[in-house]
Image 1 (spheres, helix red, strand yellow):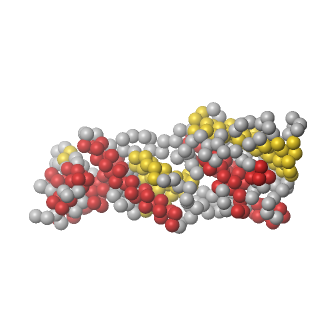
Image 2 (cartoon, one colour):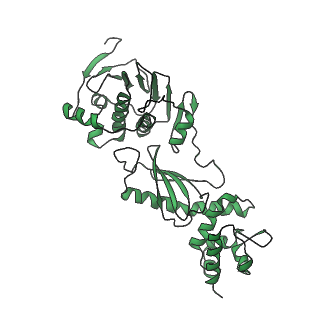
Image 3 (cartoon, helix red, strand yellow):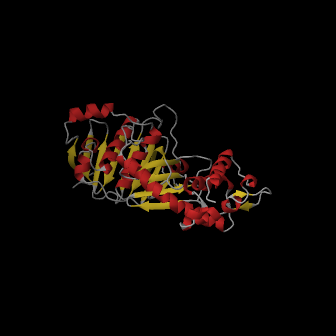
Length: 363
């Protein structure tokens, strides 16, 4: 076995090569800035704990730990684009295709004692590499300047990656700086949750949104978002689920049962967010810009203080200092019922909702 590596095989597809090349050439890919995230998804699918990336004007280097690629996966690097199976294999193929489409003159993937060298869609070579790195290492080289598909210089930063990966599930380091996602600027009004394979974080809306928003994330990378009808209180959420199906763009979620199930799981967490918010205001704290979230819960849940008192959460909501008197002092909705016309609310919607609530209360 030579130091340069023992040849294993070259240019082989498990699917018909001519048919595969034809499909790959027509495969639609996002701009360079988004294509980079195929490698983050491949890493997440491999159970990675640490992902590192660095680049210059003509190079891109990526390394990550986790489950290495096997010989059969590297000898058929684009097979995952056709078999619809392992997402790690799929994103290996997408990552390679993206690099070649971006004009890389040479790409290599070292993993599990093997080294795959790719010059083009038609030319690749797999060798044994026993002295290679313990991690998976991806290296790409350009003869010209590394540019986006539109021709502008490509820039990759920890801040950009943190924005695209709100729930990465691993440490990501870009150019020596850790990407630290913080979708809601952590505070008492943020609720994190995990339900099976679904992970998420939610916050009350900053504004009077009647519906809830969920930003979808798949394998740690943000896709798009959707609205759903809140059950307990309006919220904004980021949720990552491997069950979500992506369309051909790889960054839009298909509307199906998996998305409905994600909405249901997020909706079940609204009660936990509400309880956290109530504890916050009951201890004398207040965040004015998040008033609408708590008021939204009132209009969704409250009927009248007598019947609602049977539920401890609704009883607390009636007694929380959410309203204002004529002097601007905080007091509860229960207190406001004593003189509904004197109760002050910052929005016309809340005034209208409160009047309706007061009108239907039991004598």
